[in-house]
Image (cartoon, rainbow, N blue to C red; front, side):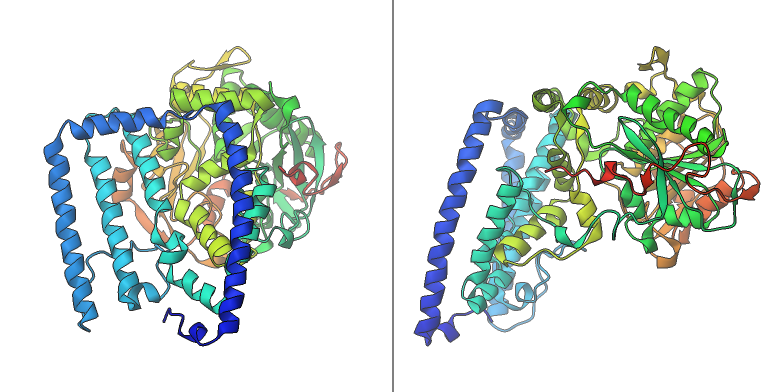
Length: 600
């Protein structure tokens, strides 16, 4: 139970609690003064509403008020639900059992503490919030007359508000936080304020919420530990060749093109879930591109530079390193977007060095690119470009913050409660360390990517974009392709990824994995987690939902299916190759130095 009974008869405990709360207040005032001073300066520099949220919500309000009868009907419906909740609460107070009026969605961990159910007052607070949240989101989604971009923006930011005002996020309405405060004499709150101050200092005035124990991990020591060596580097990337673990390997090596929006070692977090180690163990000579973490000197780097100095330079280096011209290629996320663009460029220039390609959660058609599209209107793009013009790059923290907002309850508010209300240290978690190890985006490249691809969708137009004066046409890609999407991906939605199957002209295998953007791709067979779906060869209806209706569900990882597809195209077995043994000597051990550059 939550009460102060134990403290009421202990003046010494009450005195300590009072002293702690005074210190919390003093520290809190200092924190708020620094935070407000920082953000007053920012508002003066950037404007009060750089994303034009006021304009979007103004349109929403105008449309909502144009049909007042709908709003009145919605309010009456909410009133009826609230009255039902009062009846439920009275029955609970009377000691009777009653079915709840509202319940959290499956997987909602905000209300997992037993007090949210056992104590009637907190049960009432929880259900009242859930009813109001559902009502508000329903009103937003049923308002007619808004253009698609405005509707998405209003929906997204309304959900951010709804998540932010959850009673779980406030001391006086969170039973676990109240209980902890009483038991610790308020020391949790004092520690929480200290955490806030540390996070503000770490973020240079922005609140950079720690998600894990940063001191528990070191890249190259307990993350990214697959043995290998850097055998080539330029201003944009280091090329890592991994040491073989089999006596023989397939003739044609595998080159992996990871995203540069984050670091490549998501593919090599630890030995038991490393896609890189697993591919090496299957008998492949594996190369990985490790992108540079850009700074102001990279401001003018273009998307075409990533192609020439990334993939094409890697192909040249691989031939020198092991004497093999033809390769298998894999692109993940924006790395897959670059790979598709490069394949079209190579088709136009009669370059046949990539024998087959794999795309993991990669988009080329951005018409249904998910919630990130709300950041791709003119106001948002003008704001992003203005930020980049000042530094020559987009700060990594701003990029990771945007992705975190897609899952705010899990990636923002759960840590607010843990770190600030409960005063706990975040536990060590390798995936969250990687998530916070952010990278910058070069200004010119990112401007082009957002404008030409995300907003204008030029990549799917034949000749819609040109690199090095070569028109890009994805329909010229004829190499065999393996396409993987994830069913619950919020960053590269399955329906968006699926669209590539209608553009590619060669044989295509499409596989839909369970889980999301990361766990859907990084799912080693030994863990026996999730599932995947496979369909009939060459049969691709218009929408992924139609494909899924006819597909077969297979338990576990999709990796073995992919390896069987790879093995048929990767050539005969040859003697294993050691990094640095060919014409390119080893420069430094894997994971190299580029990946170790952290954003302050």
